[in-house]
Length: 217
Image (tube, rainbow, N blue to C red):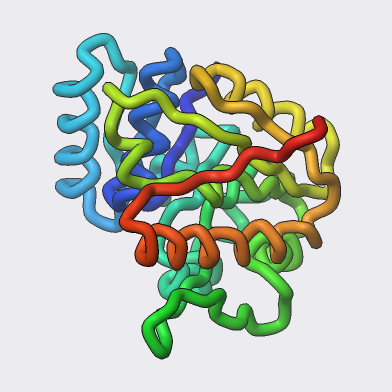
């Protein structure tokens, strides 16, 4: 199987997800706007996970060699990225981990997404030929990168394609102690993104690092 491309793989969330997937045995191609930054990130993964199968590339080259693409770039750069990359993402599984956060009056909140209720919905509308699944939105970037600390909690999956949700669920199950929760359609991504703002506010208030678990399932 071809590698998973992690776009924005040099940022905290992207690098954390790449580390966890590489540890689970997935081949990774780390993407960045600058090839040098991608190589530095790939070197970090190889130093941390010696048997990792990881390469580095520009974003465009990473997408070209992958069938599964994790989007972990900053939300502020998403519109510009899609203007360039939308056609290249057609027919691919696109895993959306973005949350459009803003900080106002001493608290985090979800910033409005023009023309959509969430990043997931925006992506599906901009990428009608891609299979978009929102996932990993409530996991701490810090904990993702701390390989010596087991992750815990549930990963909520939202997307219009049931088969795509199942593929992402398989990736989640390869990461010890995480459980996937199938939430159905992409519209539910707006509620998942709001939970991230809540978790960050809890973290600030209680000086903790929180996650979520869905009870009763």
